[in-house]
Image (cartoon, rainbow over all chains, first blue to last red; front, side):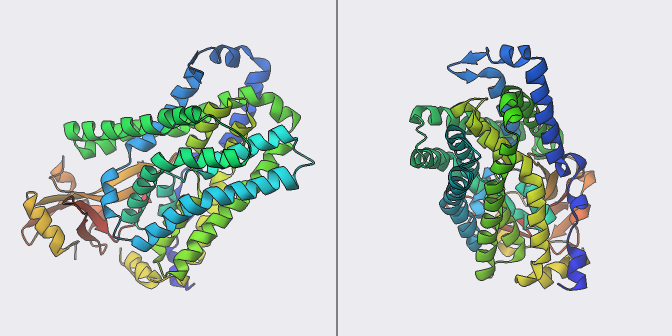
Length: 366
Length: 97
């Protein structure tokens, strides 16, 4: 990399604020707060667990909608009309996200959780953790990819297209992939339970987000929508995430206190999977001579997970106290440090891709 | 050049009224933070005073001043008679929020 190109690589402090940069710290604090709440004020989780309808916890459903709705409300699905503009990038990202990522996640998690760590994790829990890993692998990142794209100087128009396209694909593929891989893992889940969680946590927030976006833009204009409505609604997602984690760990307290090492053991296959998926997509993009500003966001979307959906599905399918829910939270715990490491790799290898010089000169002009 | 408008986008915009707004649209990250994405819309802005007004061969372009002279290109994409304007050459930037 030339000195000039080095100077064009954005720093993490430029791209991220205090909250997102230290997300792992807030998640760790949420775990501690949740465990303390469950141990010392057990009346809180006990009372909340009584609010159920059709076996769906109402407080949890509200929190999950609070996490997912803002993400769906900012997706511009008309961007899908641009699918033909960067076909190589989209072929790579959709193939990696839907035909490779779920299966490598299953294979790596199965190998580590049920074979390598067999002496350390008892069987019923190992299967639960595997289920959580499967849920993490079944959906690519939706919202943070804009931040990763910023940090790698990605192509904004391409990033919009790949997010819209992957969210549409997810609508139809998440449930079949999850049911198939859970079946292969001998973790039978009734189809109607999976279908209910897809309707509750994908279809409803996506439809509500789409209709809200269309209605409010038609009534108030897109600038008002972006700068007034989404400015208020957007920050709800991380707040909902932290509150959900506190609640989840209020129920998980016993597990954490009995086997804190499990968090580390779950993290190992998730970390390996993140690097593997990044390098498959990034290496493929390099082989196909895809420009760096497409290759980087294209590799980031698959490496990162839609963990709000994974947490939601784990709770819906296996319950707040399940090992599956714990495994999905470990995904949240390692997300930001891992992705920042990948951002660093992408920025340091920019010069291996076509268009790097042009991009650097354009940025220098700007 | 302040911003380039492709021939295809120019023809498409003229059919839509000949006005386009090029602005930054914030996207929020699920872990907090966010990014501003350059977007283009075939309409006049809510507050024209916040934009630089250009007349580019019969198309009135209202552009966010921070997007001027960055080598950006306005184009249109789509199929089945549907079109979608996009801004080529822009990277997302750190959200101003």
